[in-house]
Length: 444
Image (cartoon, rainbow, N blue to C red; front, side):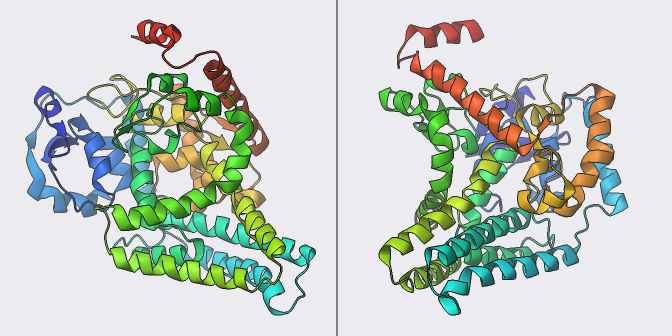
C-alpha cells in the first residue's frame, strides 16, 4: 500500500479494489466524473466501489487498467464481512430488482399534481387562492420528480446507465429543471467521502453555512479546487446561520438553476453537452410560458416564490440527513474518517435517518432511509424500508453499532440546534483568532 499511496494525484492515480491495483490516471471517461476518482487516488476504495457499481458488469471493463495485486491490503473486519454477505444476499433474493409498477403509479401521481398546478391557467380564474393551490402543487411536483432523478442517477430504476436510465434522466431534467450530470458529479463524491470537510461538496457552503468548527481553518476543497476562507464575511453569515437556514432552503432551488447552467457551459467533465442544454431550455420555456400567462405581476411573483419555497422542503430533507452529523478532516491514505475506520461505521456516523409512518414514504421519497441508501445506493427505493427493518437494524445490534434516526420534526430541530451551536462558536471566534490555532494544536 505504501507504493500505491505515492500515486494520489489525478494524472497519477492508482486505486485499490479488492486487493487489486488499477491505474486510472487521467481517466476522463468515468460516468460518475473524474472528481470521485481523484479523491480515491492512492487509497483502497473497495467497499464504496462495490456498492456504487455492479462489480460483475464493471470489473471486466477494468482489466485494461489492472496493474497487479497488493500483498498488504487491509483485511476486512467482521462488520465489513457481514455487510458484503448481506449485499450478496440481496442480489440472490432479487432485492436489487425494480418494480416498474411502483414508478408507473408515481407517474400517475405526478400527472395529477401537474394537472392541479395548471388549473388557474386553463379552467379556473386566477385568484390568490387558486394560484396558491397551483404553486403548492407545482412545488410538490418538482420535489417528487427530484426523488425520481435521485433514483435514476443511481441507475436503480432500469439498471441501464447508457440506455433507459439516461433517457429517464432527460425526462427528469425536463420536469425538474436541474442538470442531471451536475448533480451526479456532486452526489457520487458525496457518497464516497460523506461529510469530509475537505472532500464532500454537500457540506461545503462557506461563507453562508458552517457545519463544523473545523471549517474555521479555511479548508481547501479537493472537489472545488479552491479554499473556503473563514473571513469576516463568513463569520457574520455563520453567526446567524440557524436563523438563515430555512429561508435559504426556501430559495435554494434558484442556486440549482445557476449551478446547472454553469456546469453545462463551463465543465469539461460533461457528456452530450448540447442535449442536456436543450432539455434545460425546454424546461425554462414551459415554466416561462406559465409565468407569462399570469396577468398580474404581483401575483406572478407570489406564485413563483411560493412554488419554489414549497419545493424548498426538498433541500431541508437533503441537508438534515448530514448537517448535524459528524464531519471530519481528511486522513492521508484513506477515504474514511481514520485509518481504523471502515465503510459501514463511516456511513453510520455521518448519516441520519428520518423515522416516519409508511404512508408518509411518498413525502420523503427514499431520503428518510439515508443510512440504508448510503450503504446500498443501488437498491430500489421501494425496498429500503424492508432492508432497514430486516437487515440493517440487526446488523447494527449484532456489532454494537449506533444507528441514528429521528422523526422529521426532531431531525429538523437537531439540525437547527447544531447550526446554532456552530453559529455561537463563530460569533466568539473572529478570523485569525488564536482560538483556531489552539484547536489545531489540541486536535493535532
